Length: 282
Ligand SMILES: NC(=O)c1ccc[n+]([C@@H]2O[C@H](COP(=O)([O-])OP(=O)(O)OC[C@H]3O[C@@H](n4cnc5c(N)ncnc54)[C@H](OP(=O)(O)O)[C@@H]3O)[C@@H](O)[C@H]2O)c1
View 1 (cartoon, rainbow, N blue to C red):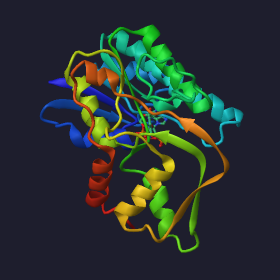
View 2: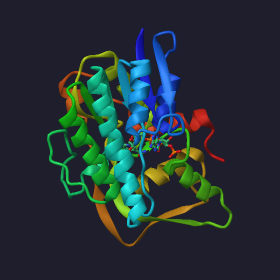
View 3: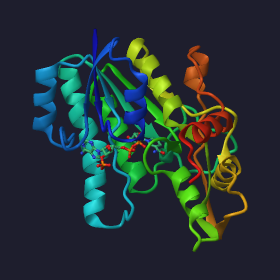
View 4: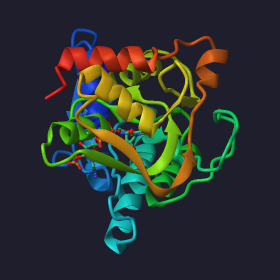
């Protein structure tokens, strides 16, 4: 039976993986930062030596809210880069596979076409820079790695979908103002978990983009689609902040496509299903 270690298991992706993976098929170790803090090298090594997982899935992450604060900058690099390094070193030590999750945010330049795995990243902002540093450390320190980049992940927990619904249900709020004119692809944690499972089971390595299909959208369209599917469209107006900057980080699932691996389902279909299943409208 394959031994799987999920770090950051109480986050959106961690929880989706926990629901998807069958305990009859795998022996699963799930930890979050109060059990194993991935920034602590000793904790990571002790856990690895004791449990000897075959596959480690790093679902941990820190997304700073106020990136200019020095302690948040340090903490971002500690979790997103040093944490990834600690897992990579330990995984290599026991020849385990590491599945490292990363983000569309590492791309920032305007583009006419979605970014594929061979495009050169240009991370801007502390979150993006620290996640990219994590990717680089994983690549430098080990052989059996998979880096999966995704975007606008929603699922159990608090995310953009909740933010929109909460604002729509708040009688004191009639307008939601978006800071950026951002374009990417909404991806359900459930669809992302299905892709991660393929990499747990198979022997495919390298960098892969994994976002829902059906094309990209703007944050504005994402918010309005949430309102439409929840029947809350008359309760909230979503607008862009004056002078909102354009942001384009649409990912192309090129590696999944050309290597014949399954592609995540359509973002509108999965969003609708998610809202129906979770009753996310109040
Ligand atoms: N959400 C997105 O839109 C998105 C898009 C692309 C890529 N990603 C990446 O995909 C991964 C999973 O994303 P997600 O949205 O599922 O994340 P999430 O919901 O924010 O969950 C991350 C989990 O990691 C835990 N954590 C934080 N610091 C840790 C540490 N030092 N040691 C162990 N665990 C720690 C967090 O605990 P606390 O909550 O207690 O801090 C949380 O439970 C992350 O690496 C993220 O960067 C996310």
